[in-house]
Image (cartoon, rainbow, N blue to C red; front, side):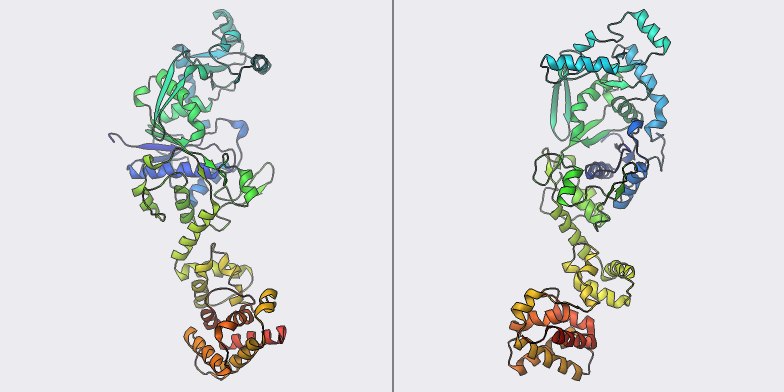
Length: 511
């Protein structure tokens, strides 16, 4: 590419950051890094009525968590600031006035009641999509229909108004989208969107075009929900005289519900019991608290890898990528056009893979942190052994404790179904003999020596080991399934193992 690639992620601080927004940020970041360009973060807070305190910090913390670091942002400004639209308010007026001067925009003085009357009138006339457009504007109060002196008087008196774009009639607007190819829209289907509100703040449509131009944005990568607005934005670039430097557009496919029917929402996530936000969020207005992927136990690198595949694929069978590998493999032409089903089981699979790639020492740190909450402590070496045994059975770091607690706390109860099916006289005889043999053994217990002693005990008792192994596991762990039993024996040691076997013999009794 002949000039430096510059992309931006431009969220609104109106609440928690949806996973779809995080994916948009990720794709922008990967594209910029692949092209050796810059990734900007801009806060689009022109709608002050919807501004939510804490939302800006939430956006920043979310991107920090998964390692998406903007080159320029409100917290790391470059030469194109400010990076909050509310701080750029004075910049937009001149461009709105330029559009007015060139006849591409006009003042509209309609009240909310008059706008509602217009919509009702069109609805009664069976107009499918009532809107303020090239036809209806001729019947409304604006600078196109009112005498020039009246318009001047209204402006001088401070009468409230908005500035609307003047969409041309019977014109085809074309856009070559990087994901979807050529998109063509007839101007008769577009409405005269408001560019400047009555409070002097620009709407998204004007502000983002001006900001993208002034910040040198070369590619706009955003969600599919903005595709209907793209023809309007193309017209704005043309009317402002910036068509030659207009960025390329790429509209990303929607994230769909697990069944594929409709856009994924917070309600869907709650219904199916999975997160939809990267971090937990407490709404300052309602007090509602929602858990995020981080708090649910997802690792940031696993979450990022999962996110990358929600609409993109590398063109081969690989699924596990480091951030550097994603940057190297990423390309816009591998993004699909159709929506992507959200599969939380795939997210869990990614988490399992990344959890297993961690060292025993790293995993032990998670376990020790959970033990601290339970007022328990073990030597770091033992925590590492437990983590090593449990890592293949864990989906989240918290599973090391919740699923492996039997290696630290002796069972007080036993799985009733396993007792009913597997606890019999042979099991009792084997466990009684094994306990005695463990007492007699002098060498420290290892997985290999524990197995050899158990096999020898079974042989001397004339018992087939396979028939009673589930009962042996039950006596030691309280359940009938789990990780390698001999590894557990080694971690527990002879003394604890004997204690547990004798407790089970007393507690469960004879068959």
